[in-house]
Image: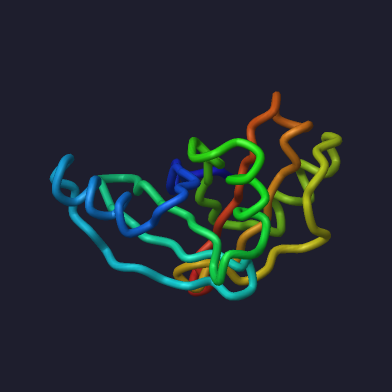
Length: 136
């Protein structure tokens, strides 16, 4: 069952400038950076009550975010929904005809199991499901 909107991800061409903007211009609390080698991204999180804004930037200039930025420039990348049983949610959504970008969840930022729903299944919006590893 979906329990909350976990985060909104924004692809940014310059991570340091974007971090500065969210911290200094908008005054948001900064929760640090994390490189996610498996996704080839660098992330920065700004937690807000009940959700976060995630800034994503290509790690070492490569990966899917690099392609996204080349094609579209910066902008909203995906919505992430927190799950309390990601395997059940994936099975439920697959049974309803949703297509995923991978066969099974993998480890993402914050030691969570994550999987992405293909944008074609969600009116052009990339949706991520995320479950902390300590919730089973």
